[in-house]
Length: 237
Image 1 (cartoon, helix red, strand yellow):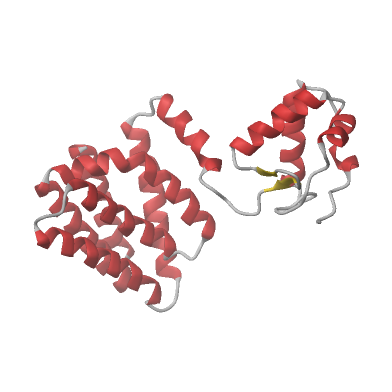
Image 2 (cartoon, rainbow, N blue to C red):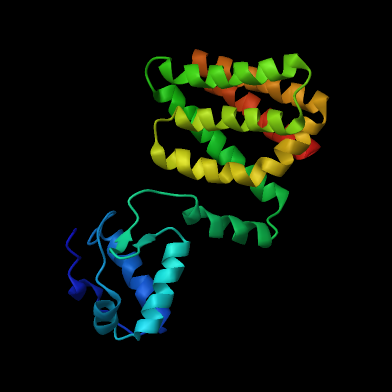
């Protein structure tokens, strides 16, 4: 069994609500590297004593952290800091964004910031190996379009695979995870694009231009194609 982290680390410098105290302290210890992914936390009683909170409050805080994917509660074993990022970490943010009614212009700026940045990072990498999976995703989308039998859902998944391949090509795991989360915000609008075949064909044309620009390491060409793609998304979604 993995030994638990020293419960003394969890002493709180000031009192908030009991649940906030537990959550804030664990967040602080993760950010400062005093506890790390895979570490086993002290049990409820030890946390309760260190933080000056009731066991009920500690239990409630741990449930919240578990729901967010920050910790993993293993029945009969203990509570651990998650050792990998999972979708639960982003789900509550996604719902918050959706419920806040974020406007299309804000989404457009977010997409522009990320995709142009992704293209720039890809071009900094040596060799063309990272482009091959992007080209493959593009070819699979082309095959669906040429078959004439693909439905909008299939084309949307192929479109998303192309964009995810762009993120993968950066070789940056943080970008991959965050961009994957951002893409979820665009699923309804991408589906709307492919519901209209003409708009879907235009998206495919722009994907072709993006790949060509990446292979040529032509940032201005890539930027122009990406901006046109985003403009089309705004116009047709």
